[in-house]
Image (tube, rainbow, N blue to C red; front, side, top):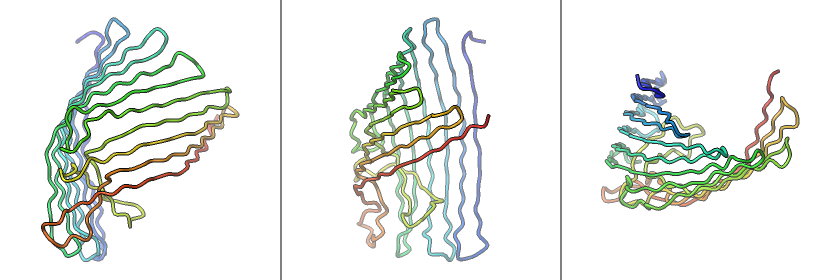
Length: 280
C-alpha cells in the first residue's frame, strides 16, 4: 500500500526443558519470546532504509536438585528501535549509517558456595550511532571501515568512546585471497559461564553492575582463502583477542558486603581451519 516499501511482522516463541530423571543431575528451563516489526523502504535515489522495532523476553533457570550445581535464575527484557540507512554510489561503494535505541532490564539470581542467594538486577538504556563505509569499486580489493559511538550506556562506567573496526580483503590471484581485520569492542550487557563446563548449557545475561567497568576487547584476525578448483575451498585463519574487565562470579563470597562479581583481564588466541567441498 506504499510504493517501494516492504512491511514484515515477525515472531519467535519457544519453551525448552531439559529434565534429568537422575536426582543427582540438574534440570534446565529456557523460555524465549520475540515479537517485532520491520519496514524496508527504497527511495528514488540509490538509498534504502530499514526501521526495526521489537520486544524480547528471555527467562532461564537451573534447578540443581541433589547435584553439586548451583541454582540460578535469569530474566532479560529488551525493547529496541533501530533505523538503518544505506547509500550505494555509482562506483559500487556503499555508506551505511544507523541509530539504535535500547531499553533493557535484567535480573540474575545466584547461589554462592555456602548456599545463600543474591540478586544482580539492573535497568538501563543505550543510544548508539554507527557508521560504515564499504570500498567495493575494485574486483580484487575490498575494504570496509567504521565505528560505533555510544551516547548513553547501560553501565555508568561505560566508556562512551568510539569503537573502530576495519576489514580488508586482497585477492592477488584469482584463486587466493588474503584477509585481515581489527576492531575494538565494548560490552555492558554480558554473560558468564562456568569455566569447568566443557559445554555450557546455561549462560545468564545481565547488565554489568555499576561497581564494574564495562567489558572490553581488542580483536586481531588474519587469514587466507584458497580456491584452487571450482568445487574446493580452503580457509585458514588466526585470531588474537585481548580482554579487559571480563566479569566472573565471585566463588569465594561469604559475606553480604562482598561483591557478587569480580573482573579480570585475559587473552584468547587460536587458529581455525575450514575445508569446503561443493557438490556438482
